[in-house]
Length: 344
Image (cartoon, rainbow, N blue to C red; front, side, top):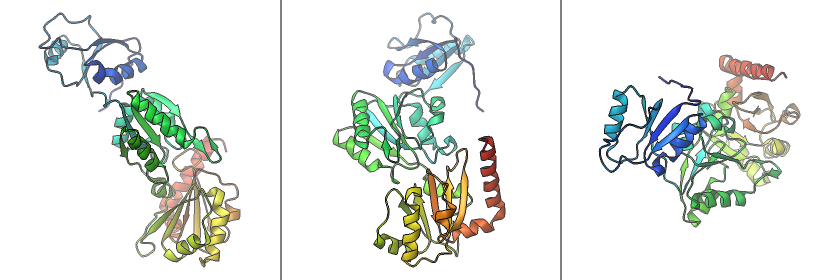
C-alpha cells in the first residue's frame, strides 16, 4: 500500500550523517517540508532531550549505531518514523535506459538511481516530463534532435565527468537502452578515461516495445525466427541492403523516417518483393501514437506525413498483427483516443 501525505509547511526531522542524508533532505525540502537535521547520535545511544516535536522523523540508514533509542522514543511519543535509504556514493556516473518514453516502462533499478541522483542529464526521448516526481536532483536537458545538437556528444561527456569529479552522483538518462544506438559505449569510455566509476542500467529498447505497442511481434512461430535492428540515421549501402534482404526474418529500423525512401528502394533493388508488409509506428507510448501500414512498394507515399520518433518494421510479422484483430484493433483504438485527446 502506498500513502501520500501533504508535507507543505510540516516540520520533518531528518536523522543520519550529512553524506548519507543529503538526498533525503533534498527530497523532503522539494515536497515543501520544513527540514531540521540531526546528523549524529552523539557517538552512542541517544539519551538527550528529544528535539522539538516534529510532524515526521525521516531516519536515514547511515550505518551508525545509536539511533535506535531515539527512534524508539519518537515512536513511543506518537511521532511517525519513516525509513529512508542512504544516498548513493558520490563521484560516480550511472547510465540509465529510460525505455521508449513512458515511466511505466522504467525499471525498478532505474527509479532507484534517479531517486538517489544529485544531477540528471537527460535526452528528449527519455521520460523526462515525469522527472520532477521521480527525483529531486538538478535536471539538465542535453537532448539532441536530428540536425540540431543542443549539446554535442563531446560536451555531454565532459559535463558528466566534471560533475562526478565535483562529488555528485550523476545519472545519464537516455531513451531506450544505452547500448542500442544510444552512444552508451562512448560515455562509459569517457568516464573510464577520467577515472570516474561508471555503471550501466539497461532499459526497454524501442526496437521491441514500440512494435509491441502497435500489436506487432518482432518474432512469431513459423513466420519469423529472427529480427535485425538497424539505425535509420544514415542511408545504408547497397551491400547492406543485399545482406538485409537476404537474411529473412524481421527488420526493425529506429529513427528511420529520414532514410525511408532510400531504404525501401534499396531493399527492392536487392530483391525483396514489393508486397512485403511494412509498418511505421510513430510516437510509441506517447500521446498521438499512430501506426501506418503499407507494403515495401507503397510505403514511401503512405508514410509521407510521418515523422520521428518512429520505428519501422518490415516483414511478415506485420501481416500477423493485422490478422490479430483483437490486439491490433485495440492498438488502433488507443491511437484514435490519443489523437482525439490532442484535438487532432
